[in-house]
Image (tube, one colour):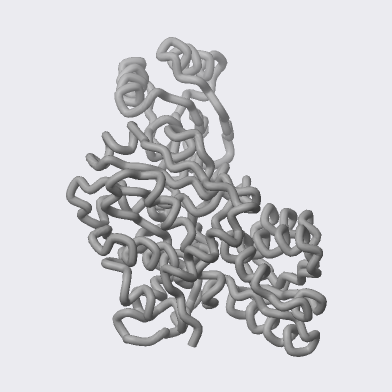
Amino acid sequence: MQNVTLASIQAARARIGGAIRVSPCHFSHFLSQLTELPLHLKLENLQRTGSFKERGALNKLLTLSEGERKRGVIAASAGNHAQGVAFHAGALGIRAQIVMPLATPLVKVAATRSFGAEVILYGDSYDEACEEALRRRIEEGRAFIHPFDDAEVIAGQGAIGLELLDQVADIEAVVVPIGGGGLISGVACALKESNPKIRVVGVEPDKLPSMLRAREAGAPVTIAAEATVADGIAVRRAGDLTLPLVCRYVDEIVTVDDEEIASAILMLLEHEKTLAEGAGAAALAAVVQAKTNLRHRRTVVLVGGGNIDVTLLAKIIERGLVKDGRLLRIRVYLQDRPGALLGLTKILARERANIVETIHNRAYYGVSLGETVIDVTIETRGATHITAISHALREAGFRFERIQ
């Protein structure tokens, strides 16, 4: 079996150092106050391809023989590993073929193609795409670049752990997202072999806790496919190589749901001015939701990637505004006569509520012939402002209800 050691991670760091940037790891005042932890963010979303994945991909590519390079490489990926392989294979003059699930976000497909790789869309999940890639590997004689279950890939990701030791003095805890386990295996090995007292916490989506189930069973198990906003860590089966490393070096695994991840994405965007995808925000979600007790330890949260589909991002922003009370929709019942709508808009204007959208319809909602109904979406300043608007409408005699 391939081995991952501190020495192999140190060698990987030296090997890839000229082509991979040392991503920033900054202290967050806002998040430190919110979580009551000294909290740093390791921003791997700022890598050239938008994710940590290019570290492992490049390390693997650089260890291929000349014959393997000439035959070309193939990989299966939901997006970030694909971009890492495509970009660095192109830079090294190696032909790359990437098999991606049909549901892969367009931004990731387009980026992978832009780096010069041949993209093949196949299957409804990563597992089906991987099966197709392995079939093509045999058929075409290409070298397979596994996204996580490969010693050289794991060692490349582990370079992040060595960087953290240099960047954060007296680091006490690191929180890392888990898909197949390649990232956390490398990071945890680097940290624990350097300082066993550092606490390492892994985070999985609650819909696909494949590593957690594998630890419980003592072996990798395949769990049912589920859709999650954290598509980058939507892995149904933990790796054969990564599981023993996780069991040895990772202290705890916790899970977060899609709502918690979406909230973390919005928090990073609004307060830290950084864009994270679902998988990239999962670790922060676990800390903000206090899924693990870090007891005031100096903590690093790994923001693994920022390649989020803009359509999904728009939905997350809108839902977040609704949850925070900054976007409100109400259904108002009006007398069907001239001036009724004007009276409503005057009140909203007086209360400084900005109207975003209106839907005015006489034929629906089951109202009487003398009434009409209008749905109004408005921007507010939060819960206190909503209370003031509601009071003003009641004082004016309007009958209304909030639409969730």
